[in-house]
Image (cartoon, rainbow over the protein chains, first blue to last red):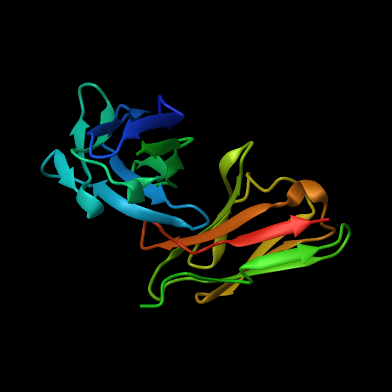
Length: 112
Length: 112
């Protein structure tokens, strides 16, 4: 069965500093990968997705993620965070023929 | 596109009462998902439908929970009788195949 591991439950980072949120998945076949963001008291919003093609995927709000098949990772990065990036971030995976499996989420805390 | 529409946004009910949550998916989407989110358990998939047919209800916690999708534009999640431990935020999401879900804003259920 597929699984997604988000290694950090919480990540504190100073405003304007870079951030990386880690995600690893377990699958030996082709996968589709997603990052979702959930702002306080809101639903989940798609941040970016990898379906095929370039391994570097750019999303909304200046985020990007890199698909690394050899390391089965899909880490999310942003070069300079803003206070408005405070949210919970979910990594997710599917093989395309079944439901999406979500990670447990990483809370991003932006420090002033 | 109005997105996935859930109602009500907030529901407060007494233990033992019946609760019905509603969802209108995005037109043209063939999958619909019901999730529950709590601090303790995170995001849990309860059930999902494909073309109005329930495919996987293994996440439904017990017989008190039931879900229906009478047509492509409407689904309900019913809890009868409700219990305080059912208090959570319930999300509906829809997708075309599995290429990224669109979530509704959620229903915050409080059972007192």
